[in-house]
Amino acid sequence: MPNPQSLTPTLCAIALGSNLGEPLAHVQGAVQCLDQTPTLALQACSRWYSTTAVGPPQPDYINGCVLVHSQLAPLALLDHLLAIERQFGRIRRERNGPRTLDLDLLLYGDQIIDLPRLQVPHPRMCDRPFVLVPLAEIAPDWHVPNTQHTVRQLLQTLDSAGVHRLTPEVCP
Image 1: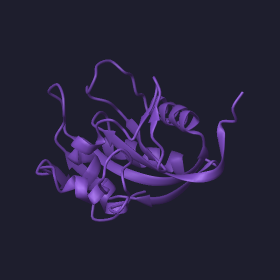
Image 2: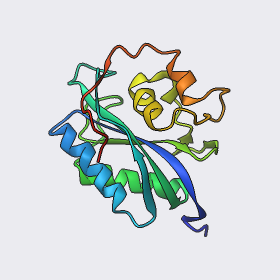
Image 3: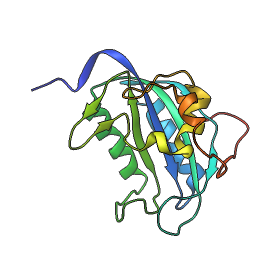
Image 4: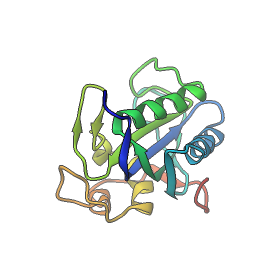
């Protein structure tokens, strides 16, 4: 059975979002959970942004991104993120529907992962300004595997008019 922990820490990018209940409290609480996880080391956190929702009619989101060094293997990290979502009351009802908390593993080092449960780089990150704006704040020069571009270059191709800085300071 494979060890769920990596031999060496891997830099990972995680997107956070919420638009139900107390969204700012939810994303801030999720950052605290990540920071308190012994197998993760929080490296950077973006500012929080208010973003227009994608999908069915619903409230705007609070979005941000964090970088962590993870000792967890990719699927173990995914399972940990899903557990944090459940801790904050996440119930999956409809695709792109409203949620108390959404944690997406965007990047896992320079790895390309294509499994039934996990695709890295996140398959829609390059099309989402609500992901790339906060990610570019903390990792602008990260080369996104499967592309020839950095996060900053990918962001320059998108319209980010629906993404507005909410907080002047970086999280937690």
